[in-house]
Image (cartoon, rainbow, N blue to C red; front, side):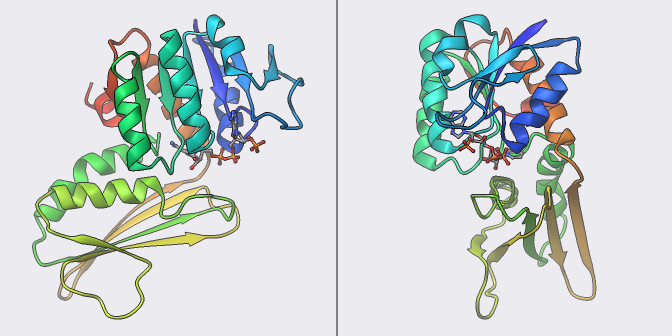
Length: 251
Ligand SMILES: NC(=O)c1ccc[n+]([C@@H]2O[C@H](COP(=O)([O-])OP(=O)(O)OC[C@H]3O[C@@H](n4cnc5c(N)ncnc54)[C@H](OP(=O)(O)O)[C@@H]3O)[C@@H](O)[C@H]2O)c1
């Protein structure tokens, strides 16, 4: 059994990952970590009590799964690197500078980081470059929708889709939430926030007389939790390095 500590265990995503771990016979919940001051510190989740100190539970786990905030994730990764514990990071809103530090930490532990753990989005990321290459002259826009409490905008997934499209040879620059006329080499990225929308991403490819829209819709966080468990299985026992969900899907 793989012993997993979940950081952000009482958050929306953390709770879903904890549920998936507890209902599986391949994983065991070894720790549940929350922000200091969280009202659920000390209460029981499955076999463990919610704790605010990751260092206290790191000795008893094989890997951590982190769905917290960028600042908390950075502290957690530093602790994992010091103790040789692999880390799956689902937190979004990580800055370029923080990403550089994560790359440095991946010299001592395996780290898998993905702003979207669902299989569907990662397949879309793999294929989108090929699709846009086949449609020269089409305008490309990305629309993402999330619940009203999401802290970052646009989503890490929308940014990653835009990055894949640019890498596919299109010299496009992103325009976030356009105001005014569209210019030729833009890729518009639009963030909608409201209600309890789990997560939707649509890539719109608009040509003369035809459009294609590719939509991924997460109906529940179960899709992200299932991907997180696959990522955990994939990462345990790997050599240090930086891994992605696309690496996992390729295997
Ligand atoms: N990769 C994916 O597939 C995926 C899918 C969905 C969401 N996400 C991302 O995952 C992150 C969490 O999302 P969410 O919707 O679950 O948010 P959330 O409900 O706000 O959960 C975050 C949890 O982390 C806790 N936390 C904050 N600082 C902490 C620390 N230092 N140590 C331990 N726990 C800490 C928060 O506690 P307090 O409330 O007490 O501050 C909260 O319980 C976001 O970045 C989100 O964009 C990723």
